[in-house]
Image (cartoon, rainbow, N blue to C red):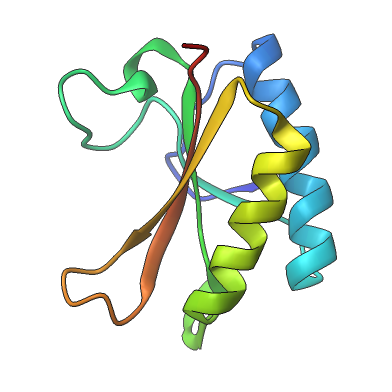
Length: 115
């Protein structure tokens, strides 16, 4: 897993499971390493699980370092997320976030949230 500059995580068991599963799903669907953009860093809602080290965001650019090379399609991101949900198991939520117009995926959010 690659980390964008400033991405901060705590390597607890929830993150390590997420990282292993994200690696498997990303290589299967996108043929590259996963890129983590947010752990505890960034701006999130006040009750976000990011702030208690149980949520992480993945980048969906075709080239993890260069947005000018495009993004993966919405369908590809939805398929990836569906597979990641299965691999992670029922204690994790995976949410595909779209831009305000619904034209493209901005990131994929994952959280450890046993309810």
